[in-house]
Image (cartoon, rainbow, N blue to C red; front, side, top):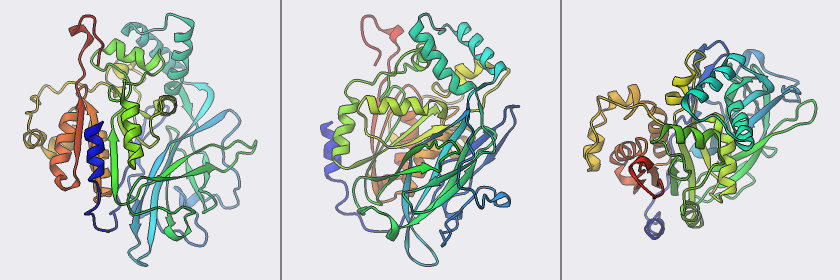
Length: 427
């Protein structure tokens, strides 16, 4: 904690002012109930037109919802909105400062579930040995597993209001996910956001449904300069035990999430020093609501979420839980353990391999997200926090090698398998 605080004290006195280039933070893997998928929403913020007198942007121009005043969410459906970030950019034509962000969420049915998917997941849970054995575990299992088996609410129009600054629309895809880009003039923001320091937040709310329901989340406006903490979640701030598959699945589906001792105090200290937080994990978006509750209940600072899209295989539920859940990467037989030096570790991850699968299967998401965060905020200093249970050391070493001038501090915790210890804790 003292070392991290010292790093913050020397953060930004020598930084000069410039606008951040636009970069893409989110991509969608639209997955239908029939297993079909298509990659969408891959354009960067720069492709969004600047707001006009009628700041309406849509994802389907041929079906613009003119005249709509309500979100198209039905009585038996619900919406989950995810916290996101906004960054400052300069408009090339006018030279004026704007804040760009991407709103992201998911629409699902409250009661309709995939019957085959539910049965497959139940059979897989029994086969893998983490099926609930008590009423409390059964209640937790049913609630969390429901996030993977609820049917998506497709092609629903969802409207957003950002503190009266305008109305934006998005439509849900085959997997229920939706996103829309928006830009707001710096002059119109009801916030005084400094060029250096921690983020300021605004709430955004969906337009009400016909029965009056609304949902809300936060946009964190991150200044161009300051300190950002990029944090992994599993076995970094939350006990998951990724090296033991049965315990990993039990901690994910059966038990309340438990914080790693001392981490909330450390992060609170960093927040008091003005740090912004970005939670980057291979955990799937289906777990985001419970992860956010975990942050609140454990007194962790709030921040933007950058989780992973997963495609469910109806025919291979056991493989999905063992590997595709994303919490435990598949082993890379052709990649030797990285050498200790940062430069050598970076050299062990060639670009062509990283783009095909990352330094470990399933790590493209984490590498790309961290890389884009540092590119989007070239004047901010970064503290990268992770653990040895996945591929964080290799990813962070490669990132630090490519961005040597952003004062990156790497914090990696060693995760020890409980089978190798007797009478000791797992972390």
